[in-house]
Amino acid sequence: MCRWSNSQGSLTRLTKPLIESGLLVEAPGTGDADRSRQGRPSQPLDVVAESRSFLGFKITADMVYGVVTPLRGDITDRLDRPLDGREPAEVVDLIARMAAELAARRPAPAGIGVGGLVRERAVVGDSPFLLWRDVPLAELVRERTGLPAVVENDVAALVEAESWFGAGRGLERFVVLTIGAGIGHGLVLGGRRVPYAGEDRGFGHHWILDPNGPLTPNGERGSAVSLLTIPSIRYQVRAATGRDATYEEILAGAAAGEPMAARVIGEAARALGRLVAQIANFAMPQKILLAGEGVGLMDVAGVTVNETVRAHRHPQASPVALEAKVSDFHDWARGAAVLAVQVLVLGTAGE
Image (tube, rainbow, N blue to C red; front, side, top):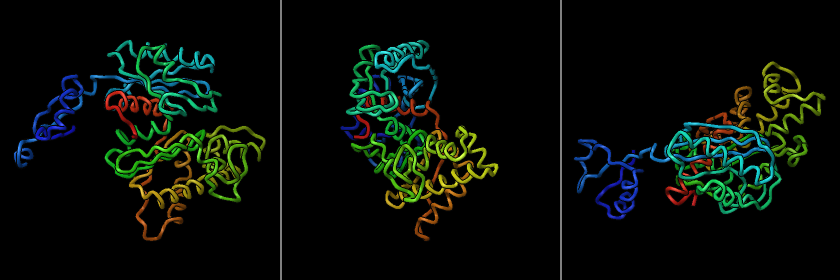
């Protein structure tokens, strides 16, 4: 529930059209708490969550993941489809078909958010997975579906969703760190995400955590990418054993004490601990959310991660509030939908 004082003219002007549109309703007062205030009593307002629905999509190299969310950002429906091809027209056509199917059983969605590496929330400047450059995706989706569309870097969209409705709700200083196919990082200060021009440039390739660490095809020697990402972990095990194992198999092997899997996962855990400690030392967040499909590392080597964090912090420093959340691609799609809520309803996101 949100509370705005009706005695403040500017806030009344802001909320009146939202009430008239059905996005907000006046909620019952809080009795003694209201009467204890001086001046005109404040009127609590509540969001009508189901008054609008939003679609969010996460595009990977071979799949499109779609979700529906109301205004509160929880997922109420989902739909996944394999990509027919990677040409922009083919991807947009698939999104349009999925949007029509998702919207068939609920109020027409007010907009679509699409995760991606973008410029100005409209153009996919560079997508290494889709091999796209300078694709005006928002315009193409809008033309094909007739709905307003918002495109954003998927990590930025996830940070917005977690800050508004998830692990970072109500926090002034909050960090999201994602590990999976790549490394992602987002910072919230003063309750707002900090946007920066290089957030889609893959900072993990050059964030060196161990100068003597492994050299892999992706990232500098001993970088966050070389030590922590799923492709790099699989590459290290394959190079040493000649066996192509899945990430889950490597984690299981490490838990069972298999020497090579245990060594690689141990190095990754220590690298993650150093990375978390460095972020905590500089950003001083109230909480760090560790998310992404690679978070299973914490189940196997969380003790090592936490011990390494403590070893790289001042002995009297406050403990790092580290929360782990295994995220699937629907969470990324949800982030895109929440971004659409911010931009299309409130007219802003991270600005």
